Image 1 (cartoon, rainbow, N blue to C red):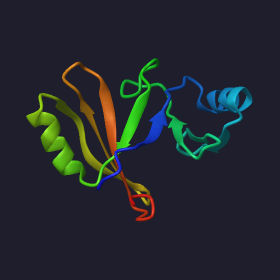
Image 2 (cartoon, helix red, strand yellow):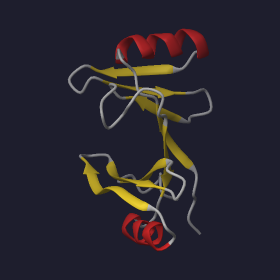
Image 3 (cartoon, rainbow, N blue to C red):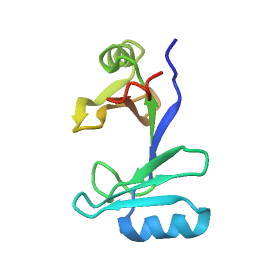
Image 4 (cartoon, rainbow, N blue to C red):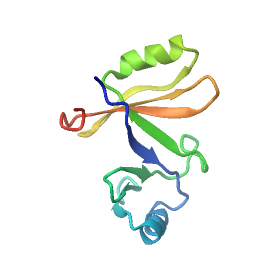
Length: 123
């Protein structure tokens, strides 16, 4: 049976490094900043985590994006459309990490699907 856990949460930030420091100081999250990508990863004490993408048209301020584990992104995207949703971003690879896609539910909420390249993560 597939785990349908929340696996990643992105919180858009106007200043990615400053957002990481804010949440580290506020919530004691572990922060790892990648200056080349201008993206900070965060990890909470229970091992859950996500990132801070820079605010953009694809990641507007105020639009926190939740990613859910998927064993089969293509099949899930077909079901999204069958159930009245819309594919926003087709399946794409995150080099050396995994694959993701974005969809919109019938209400207009945007969520992500994610499959890791790490087989331990997918159990």
